[in-house]
Image (cartoon, rainbow, N blue to C red):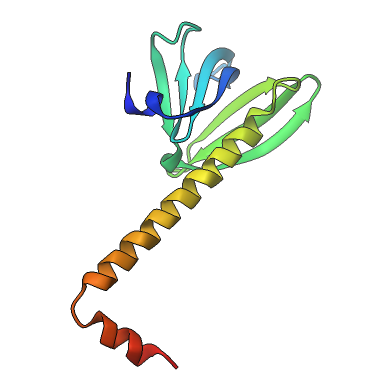
Length: 136
């Protein structure tokens, strides 16, 4: 099992992903959302992972639209690639769960960066004097 699969599972189930091909068919995929990634499998037994979207590579969940029985949404990656998904309206809105996981991931990373900066500043020589010099 990979490290991302050992993370806490936030949601598991089926999503339909629009293919990148010219005809853009909707293909049913088994998906597992963890605290760090969205894992997309080609089969329901989760034997072959076709894609792993790390949350650090996701910029936002966009274009949420509800039409008929489906909720459509787009995941925009940090390199501005757009991946289209849809799920049935009765299925606990994947887009909201992915958005919340992304926010939690970004918050955890911001706190970690802040703590790292604080540790670096506290171990740098002369840092205390510089901080006092900046105080009003």
